[in-house]
Length: 129
Length: 188
Image (cartoon, rainbow over all chains, first blue to last red; front, side, top):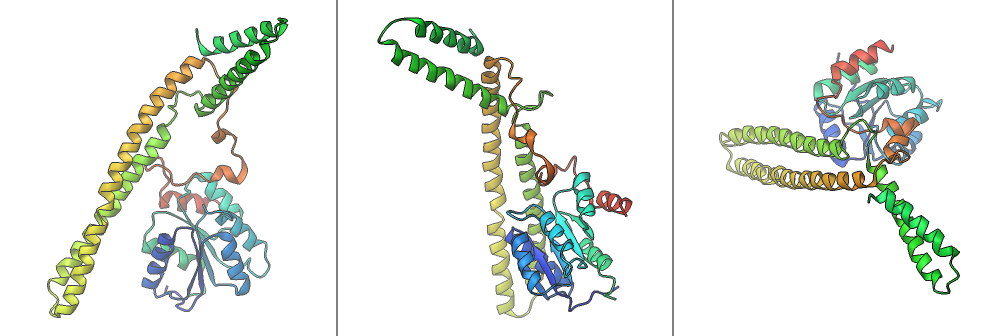
């Protein structure tokens, strides 16, 4: 399955290095329509202006965490349908359960590789054939 | 005399001083009350540093995390160096001198920057040793204070979403992506 090269992706992480890594990996997948945010609040404002096709977010950020962002997105009628992938070092069972209950589309544990990222994007973006 | 005894002794002395009809007593009582309060506060702070009573050392998780940083940065640095060496090998076969020079300069920069791992590794190791030394001293101090049953650490009172923010797990206990995928699928 090939990915939709034009999909607009919002990536969220408080570490600039990780945003750079994500952007580079997405570029290797020919996904260049990428916007960045440094925390959940900034990301939410960004996507309220124009809903993206995919959200890839870290969890552990301040002041608005990735979990807060996920809940905000899922409670917003305009945004609730958007696939949301959590990319985080939080790998405890309870974290995955809470994220799933909050409506996360998929879950990637840091450190991750390009193949995992590609597979998870493909799994949550079924329209991108 | 242990410090809990000293604290009780001070309180008794303060009580006896208060009962005396001496004009100079107020300054002495104030000083002793300050000492008494300070011992009580310090005792609570030492108690908060102690773990859950399961025998865990006070800074063991912190030193484990720091050592994990050294391991992870070493691993990452090795991968960076591997990649840089590959680029260097390719650069040597590039016919265009300008391109080859740019690649070689970039590789050199990577090599130079990779020295951070050695430097940070040494610094972290130094911090670990300092923490271990501090832990031994605090353990002695905590022992001198005797039982501190009432004290609780800030770590123990995290609840709700805040309790879910623990950062990366140590490699020996962390879930793999395969574990996460299996768990995630079981929740469908």
